[in-house]
Image (cartoon, rainbow, N blue to C red; front, side):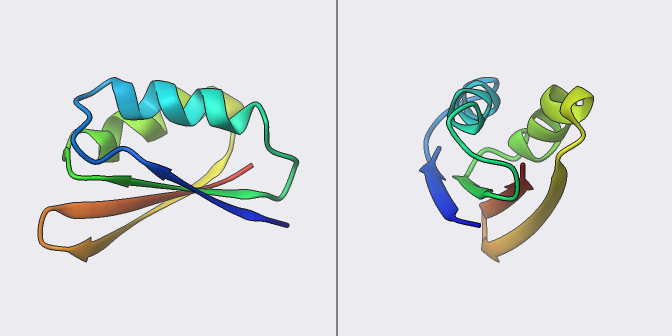
Length: 73
């Protein structure tokens, strides 16, 4: 298992979801992608965008206005 970080700070939706989907294609089963975003809609758009793929997704507030969306492939 490896952990990868994706900086989506400053990106408006749906860009964080699109970037996450593209990066996940390069990862192996069990790898973790951590998407950092400062756009609140990413908390719903990323899980909604990836729901068909059945990834495990958790969301954490890391500081005021910044979230980390962790996706286990």
